[in-house]
Length: 118
Image 1 (tube, one colour):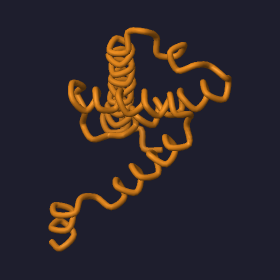
Image 2 (cartoon, rainbow, N blue to C red):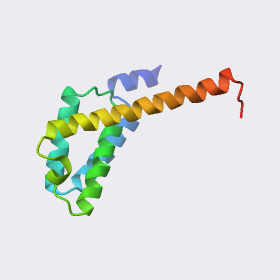
Image 3 (cartoon, rainbow, N blue to C red):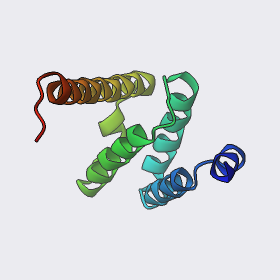
Image 4 (cartoon, helix red, strand yellow):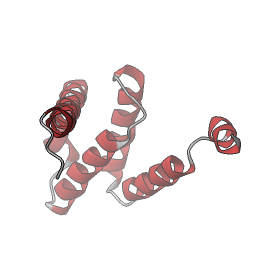
């Protein structure tokens, strides 16, 4: 009961740690990438179908980290239509979630319906 109360008042501590770690990675990016990340993050929070899963942001950071290491400019990565890039990034992330959902359903049904008890 106390755990539920703490999570309600304070939030999930693990989620906060993960978010802080993620933002430390952002702070290590070149300034242009940091700026773009924060703007895209705000956009996703505002218009995206955001379900408090930070995976989409971790994927964006990985893309930005790899691009920065390759010496690419941020606009070479996101293009001049940043909202379109963001929408497509959200869509790709949602597709990954749907694929994971399908796999989860298939795995569970396979085990319990077919009696596959490995």
